Image (cartoon, rainbow, N blue to C red):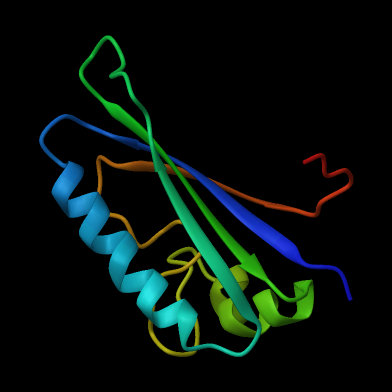
Length: 112
Protein backbone atom coordinates (compact mmCIF):
# COMPACT_ATOMS: atom_id res chain seq x y z
CA UNK A 1 0.00 0.00 0.00
CA UNK A 2 1.24 3.46 -0.88
CA UNK A 3 0.63 6.44 1.31
CA UNK A 4 -1.75 9.12 0.08
CA UNK A 5 -1.29 12.81 0.78
CA UNK A 6 -4.42 14.94 0.85
CA UNK A 7 -3.27 18.46 0.01
CA UNK A 8 -5.70 21.30 0.54
CA UNK A 9 -5.00 24.81 -0.68
CA UNK A 10 -7.02 27.23 1.43
CA UNK A 11 -7.66 30.92 0.70
CA UNK A 12 -8.71 32.80 3.82
CA UNK A 13 -10.09 36.35 3.63
CA UNK A 14 -8.46 38.92 5.91
CA UNK A 15 -9.86 38.69 9.42
CA UNK A 16 -10.83 35.01 9.19
CA UNK A 17 -7.41 33.51 9.90
CA UNK A 18 -8.22 32.50 13.49
CA UNK A 19 -11.44 30.77 12.35
CA UNK A 20 -9.63 28.89 9.57
CA UNK A 21 -6.92 27.75 11.98
CA UNK A 22 -9.54 26.69 14.55
CA UNK A 23 -11.50 24.64 11.98
CA UNK A 24 -8.33 22.96 10.74
CA UNK A 25 -7.39 22.08 14.34
CA UNK A 26 -10.80 20.44 14.95
CA UNK A 27 -10.46 18.33 11.82
CA UNK A 28 -6.87 17.28 12.44
CA UNK A 29 -7.82 16.25 15.97
CA UNK A 30 -10.58 14.07 14.48
CA UNK A 31 -8.37 12.68 11.68
CA UNK A 32 -5.53 11.86 14.08
CA UNK A 33 -7.83 9.48 15.96
CA UNK A 34 -8.72 7.53 12.78
CA UNK A 35 -7.08 4.33 11.60
CA UNK A 36 -4.50 5.00 8.91
CA UNK A 37 -3.72 8.61 9.86
CA UNK A 38 0.03 9.20 9.47
CA UNK A 39 0.63 12.93 9.87
CA UNK A 40 -0.52 16.45 9.17
CA UNK A 41 1.45 19.59 8.30
CA UNK A 42 -0.05 23.07 8.07
CA UNK A 43 1.61 25.91 6.16
CA UNK A 44 0.80 29.62 6.13
CA UNK A 45 1.97 31.96 3.37
CA UNK A 46 4.47 34.63 4.29
CA UNK A 47 2.73 37.22 2.11
CA UNK A 48 -0.89 38.23 1.64
CA UNK A 49 -2.73 38.40 -1.68
CA UNK A 50 -3.52 41.84 -3.10
CA UNK A 51 -7.00 41.69 -1.53
CA UNK A 52 -5.58 40.89 1.92
CA UNK A 53 -6.40 37.17 1.78
CA UNK A 54 -3.93 34.72 3.25
CA UNK A 55 -3.18 31.36 1.68
CA UNK A 56 -2.64 28.15 3.63
CA UNK A 57 -1.69 24.63 2.59
CA UNK A 58 -2.78 21.69 4.74
CA UNK A 59 -1.28 18.27 4.07
CA UNK A 60 -2.73 15.16 5.71
CA UNK A 61 -0.97 11.87 5.01
CA UNK A 62 -2.88 8.59 5.15
CA UNK A 63 -1.40 5.08 5.19
CA UNK A 64 -3.32 4.26 2.00
CA UNK A 65 -6.11 5.41 -0.29
CA UNK A 66 -8.37 2.87 1.42
CA UNK A 67 -7.72 4.44 4.84
CA UNK A 68 -8.52 7.90 3.47
CA UNK A 69 -11.72 6.65 1.83
CA UNK A 70 -12.81 4.94 5.08
CA UNK A 71 -12.62 8.24 6.95
CA UNK A 72 -14.27 10.23 4.18
CA UNK A 73 -16.73 7.41 3.29
CA UNK A 74 -20.10 8.90 2.26
CA UNK A 75 -18.59 12.40 1.90
CA UNK A 76 -17.96 11.59 -1.76
CA UNK A 77 -21.67 11.00 -2.32
CA UNK A 78 -23.38 14.14 -1.01
CA UNK A 79 -23.11 17.85 -1.78
CA UNK A 80 -22.24 18.71 1.83
CA UNK A 81 -19.36 16.23 1.88
CA UNK A 82 -20.65 14.81 5.17
CA UNK A 83 -19.09 11.56 6.34
CA UNK A 84 -20.65 8.90 8.56
CA UNK A 85 -19.47 10.74 11.69
CA UNK A 86 -21.32 13.89 10.64
CA UNK A 87 -18.24 15.89 9.72
CA UNK A 88 -18.07 17.84 6.48
CA UNK A 89 -14.95 16.49 4.79
CA UNK A 90 -13.24 17.00 1.42
CA UNK A 91 -12.54 20.64 2.27
CA UNK A 92 -16.21 21.45 2.90
CA UNK A 93 -15.91 21.99 6.65
CA UNK A 94 -14.65 25.57 6.34
CA UNK A 95 -17.24 28.38 6.49
CA UNK A 96 -17.75 30.69 3.50
CA UNK A 97 -16.13 32.78 2.20
CA UNK A 98 -13.07 30.62 2.94
CA UNK A 99 -12.26 28.67 -0.23
CA UNK A 100 -10.67 25.21 -0.25
CA UNK A 101 -9.27 23.22 -3.17
CA UNK A 102 -8.66 19.62 -2.02
CA UNK A 103 -6.60 17.08 -3.91
CA UNK A 104 -5.20 13.60 -3.34
CA UNK A 105 -1.62 12.81 -4.30
CA UNK A 106 0.93 10.03 -3.99
CA UNK A 107 4.68 10.49 -3.83
CA UNK A 108 6.44 9.65 -7.11
CA UNK A 109 9.87 11.07 -6.24
CA UNK A 110 11.54 12.17 -3.04
CA UNK A 111 14.84 14.01 -2.73
CA UNK A 112 16.64 14.84 0.49
